[in-house]
Amino acid sequence: MSIVMDGQCLCGAVSVHLKVPEATVDACHCGMCVRWGGGAYLSTRMAEEMEIEGEEYVTRFRSSKWAERSFCSQCGTHLLFTYLPTGSTSFSPGLFSDAKGFALQEEIFIDAKPDYYEFAGERPRLTEAEVMEKYKPQT
Image 1 (cartoon, rainbow, N blue to C red):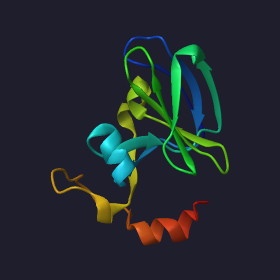
Image 2 (cartoon, helix red, strand yellow):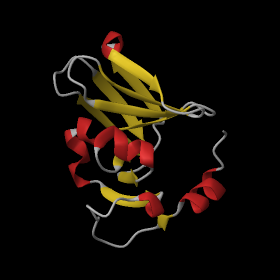
Image 3 (tube, one colour):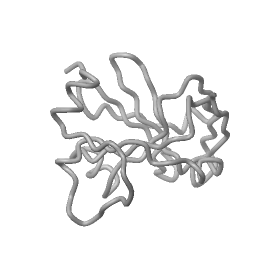
């Protein structure tokens, strides 16, 4: 069952209308995500449909050969992550008030996680090698 949500950045310059496949959030602990936000990058599952208003305020940064990260150029809010080989896009759940009830589904790059935070609860926690095997990122 898909979930439809509306959200926006901190300043409201960028609005997002989104459909995601399930009410879950994933956490990435890779070095780039931690550097980007000081901790895990939390994201919705890849969007099935999306509409962005205020595209002129979206700054895109190619952070690797296979990924692009985007943020609001006015307030700096982290907006989305795009996996370039497929064009799949996930969004920061903080944009959406409807995401408050979402469950943390999976953690990836757990072997790169800094010691200064920890998420409670049981869920799959994949190492870098397990992520590369499961998702086979294009480099």
